[in-house]
Image (tube, rainbow over all chains, first blue to last red; front, side, top):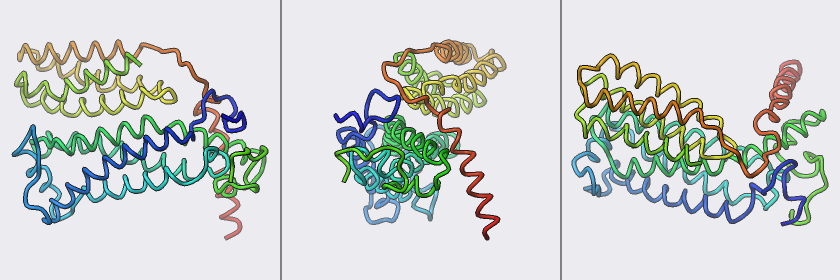
Length: 186
Length: 127
């Protein structure tokens, strides 16, 4: 790994491809689950599979009728997948906005997951296995992926504290950089 | 990491306990609220850059402790809540050494707040 790809004061590169691909794979699993639940909520499929709480899932999934709340999960997971693939292995510096946006989406999804986990037993009185699985995936994606937004924000803070434009720093490129571009940067 | 995983297990147990131990309503709601919060905080604090978030687990632990004492007559479930709260409180205090370095962590992002304020000020003057 080229030394330039490490954020200052970091021992590992948070924008490394293997981790981003793994996060995208996790988000893809969440996308598949939430798409399946959305299809049930908009009545494109007649029943929903639930190995642990067969009568619980229909109750939980009809709670927000007529709003198919699982569709918000589809949007969040899709955004996480797209944002995972934008930028190169040094994007915490060369293009900080995708990691920052990824962190924002993952944080909102994590908080929403906790609220939905609370609402299942408290408001509905039932559990939904796939909803819990989706919530778990959101929380793992947040916990595993939050280091890259931190590195990107640290870079933006360094650039903007040197009286350069905050928005240029977020957008990245030469205008928003303090250091020499890494050799891997495109 | 082990403390975070143990807290995660306690959070999952807090979610399941009302069904297993047939807790009374106040305790049931408390465990159903505290459980997901503990699960979320524990998973987040498993990340090296958010390890200090483990302290937040003191809040659901305190809630479980108070409700456990209030509903103490429902012996088994209440004792369970008190024990879970005590373990969560203990685990929230376990600090951990991290192998990596993270460039000063979230504190080093603080100058960003000043830059945003400055940008907003310039924006309001400009507009």
